[in-house]
Image (tube, rainbow, N blue to C red; front, top):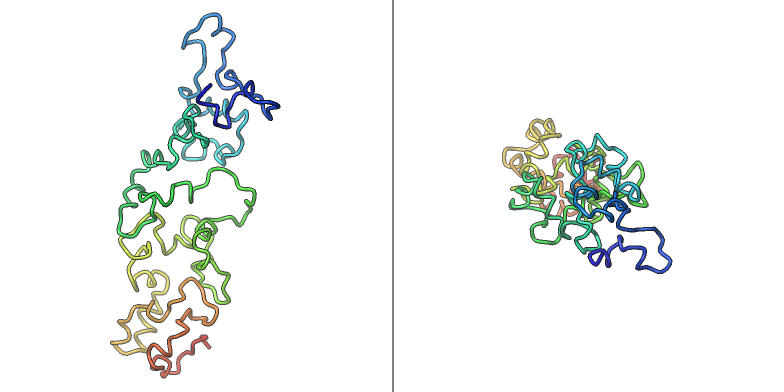
Length: 269
């Protein structure tokens, strides 16, 4: 009971006017028999139960986790993972997690862990973030149909989130599998700058193959065609001034040379 005293599972007998009735037998069934014959065999231990059985115990009080609505479909449930794979009820921490930095996630997600060691990475290994900074398993009060991976990214990167007058279509994708931020960025880590999936023009070509290889080279001579797309199209997340997501200072950068062809202006007209 001492390990529970500073956690949400503090015993009701130690609290004045408790909001919920919490006792040892709330989680450990078999108490009446156990009192008469103390033995590990006649008192249940949720930490040793199978996934669905321990879910039955914990869900008496807890309905917050998203997995509880999808039991049997969520990957953690398919693997018959026990709540105690992530939680330690008697660990003494308020969050009841195995560790506050959620390092326990990396024991199973080994491939993801290696990505955090790449040249460009989200600073999980450095301690600035944890897995739960992005992966939320507890329902939020503001959850709605539009809640997507993009909104999670925008919590830390609001400047790239818009809304913009001229949007980049890739940013507006709401598919978690391949759209929005993760269409261009590798969220855990990349060998390319800014967590990009590919370098330079190669990333742009994955969607704009015709513009980069045909239109661009026809308009410009060989020298201009070798300049990276981001040299001119700097507003890749969205722009307030250019439909083509061009740098607002582009005329100054190249002394107006880039507009002398008459093919387009800064606002894309």
